[in-house]
Length: 246
Ligand code: 1GP
Image (cartoon, rainbow, N blue to C red; front, side, top):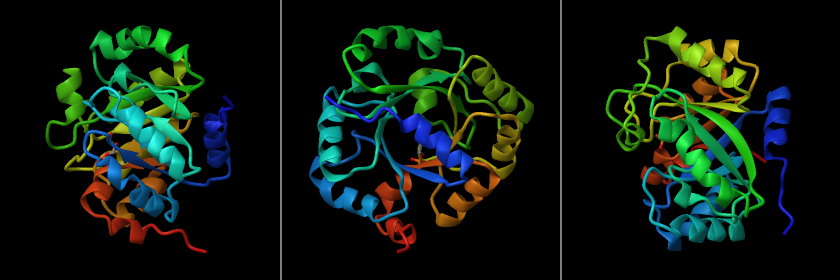
């Protein structure tokens, strides 16, 4: 099986040429498989550069079935954003190997990663080590509930910066600042800018982004890749705002 193994390098290249990236996040738990084709057609016609697949709680095999369907309909890279090891499937191109740096639950810092190794060894997935940082966003999010961890307070900017830098010093390849799916408040420009200024590795930002204006604000503040899920689930017309021009 020949697989793309350059997804991370492509992100690095985009950062150096200042090309901004957008991932559409599909949660297998909330998505009807029969809608895949029409949904992915809209993704293909938009400025999206990646499809992320994952959720906090997903039925076994739902991810594999969905990823296979997505791959049939797009040439965009499909990246796993797993809430659990049951969501690992070789049908995708890459996996964000997420360590929840904002929390102090050893399972989500290293435990599940050890469990994942024998599964990953059987795949050709590109594994991208990612420091995942959950930031308080107005209400409890699924990540908080499932991982039984507390998000970092929004006001503790230095703590957020230090957490991201610790991830970088540990050799992680990406930092993902997360407000949580369906967050009431997306991350502020100040948080994104402060972290970006101190980081040498690419910065992913997600959670609660519902408009083109918010997307542009996140890019302007320094996000290299933005992840949007709920806004596409709630409003198909949102794709119209993000159509590829040309
Ligand atoms: C969630 O960051 C992603 O993990 C996307 O969040 O669903 O709020 O767009 P939304």
